[in-house]
Image (cartoon, rainbow, N blue to C red; front, side):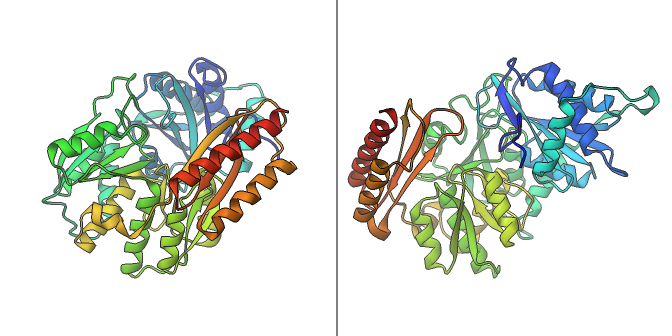
Amino acid sequence: MIEKRYFGTDGIRGRVGEHPITAEFVLKLGWAAGRALQTKGFNKVVIGKDTRISGYMFESALEAGLSAAGVNVALLGPMPTPGIAYLTRTLHACAGIVVSASHNPYYDNGIKFFSRDGQKLPDAVETRIEELLEQPLITVEPDALGKAERIGDAAGRYIEFCKSTTPPYTSLVGMKIVVDCAHGATYHIAPSVFSELGATVIAISAAPDGLNINLDCGSTHPAALCETVRQHGADLGIAFDGDGDRVIMVDHQGQILDGDDLLFIIARDRLRSGSQFSAVVGTLMTNLGLEMALQALGLDLHRVKVGDRYVMERLLADHLILGGENSGHIICLDRTTTGDGVIAALQVLTAMLHAGKSLHDLKAGMTRYPQILINVTVNGVIDLQRTPIQDAVRAIESQLGEQGRVLLRPSGTEPVVRVMVEGPDADAVERYARELGKVVRDTLSA
């Protein structure tokens, strides 16, 4: 496979104003994408964005580039990433484009794409876009330029779709829910979804100003959510990231449930509801406690590399319906085509209603194993197969037995090795991780 220059596992991302996240490059990217994606009968691309200030600039640049390629544009405005995937399908577009850097700070931004079926672009299409980026931008004839329209009811369409993923007559009446929107793309979506289903909603971090997205709030900074849940005596809290494809939840005691907890709750509820599936897809970082809890339900855990792209690939390859990451990317393929924070939260709330239990009680079926992750900076060649490292790994694995795991993973962007140790004893796990980290540092820096 040809190595891609710009596309990573989730589109193109970087600091605003630094190549490639510049207005000039994104205009050319819009043109190249338009050339690569348009097909006979499908000549419209939808564009949505999160709430960071640079979204205005990049939305306009993409619009200009697509128009120059002869492609029509439907502008959605601020919209969660999974909402853009949904509207790409229902508006019969040839592709969807998201202007977002997800959980990153406001000074970063990125561009990611959905195919016309609401899933990530195949590698071959991304490669074709990169090839076109190397060619001169040639504008179509004036009578063939693309037109632009703004979809005024985009939010309402997506809200209705989210609600449709719950059973008929689902009612959240009597529930008090705190919703943390991370000052991001869910700010005008998530509170409406839950309140329209009957819940009493306390919305926080729902006043974006272009600069405060993900700032000490949302799924990556849940302290304020935990405190607000306790302060208001709420039944639970829900936190999204800046573009709404991640979710974590908080029970009435302020205890956090990450993606592993939520996957377990949804999987168990799917089985109780009669869904037929044999496994759940997780990643190398999925907690061992989830794997054992799933085994108790008669389900396997299939592990893939970290990244929701790899989770999706395995789901499709194995014809499965449920997968995700502990960061809160949850993919319910029996409900939608991509990871969706709002829809995942609704599945957990549905499970609560089915079981007649609080979120705190519902998570009790899974015992989380202590997991320590440390980053080891090295200044030599990263060769994790060197004898001292492998000997240290085998020694720790022999101590842990079947009750633990050791994982070494080089970073793809910096000279760092991720050292993860997991097992039943927190003190032992931390000691093993520090010892292994020292061996890795000493061996690779020698």
